Image (tube, rainbow, N blue to C red; front, top):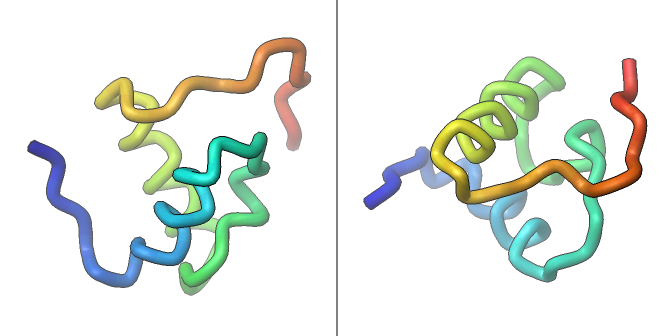
Length: 58
């Protein structure tokens, strides 16, 4: 089971659409640092996977 703060809900709903989504475009989080923390957590827990063929953005 994965537990996340309620404030992550808009970002998670966006990811659940299945569309390729840039970390910087995740809605509902206060800043880019929060977006990166969420993305890293979802990758680490194997909930999300990087999009194939997408270069890392800086």
